[in-house]
Amino acid sequence: MNMLSIEQQSKPLSLKEKSILFLQNVASGNVREVYQKFVGPDFLHHNPFFPGDSKSLMVAMEENATKNSNKRLEVKLAIQEKDMVTVYSHIKQNPEDLGAAVVHIFRFKDNQIVEMWDVGQLIPEDSPNKNGMF
Image (tube, rainbow, N blue to C red; front, side, top):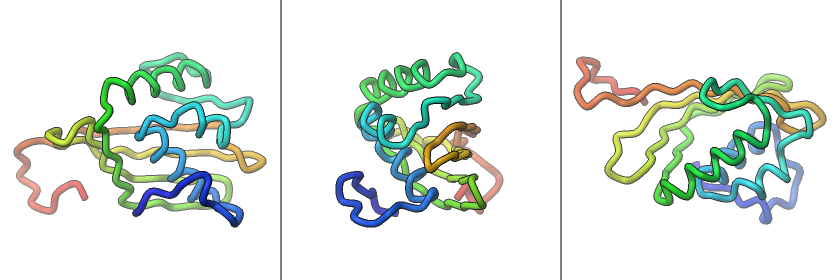
């Protein structure tokens, strides 16, 4: 999927489009801008490596974007059902990295992200499964 631009949107975005834009912009380093645009005031997340509040995750995302300025996120699948969106992506911290398969789950309220889960699995160098992770 091509990267969508926040500014180029002339029509209302679906929750699925908002989720993809959120992830693409976080990966490219536009963390605060996309937080201001899409994240609700009562946002919480379930990443076990950070406190569950909005600011802690935002700061961690900014630090990761600075440390990994060549990060790539390729959305493979996005599914929306009611106020929930699931996005399956291939994320590489740098071009040489095999990356990881990551699933982000978003819950929306009043068209803003209010809750997020993420689950990831590193892509192994050698796998007996010839189908690959994608």
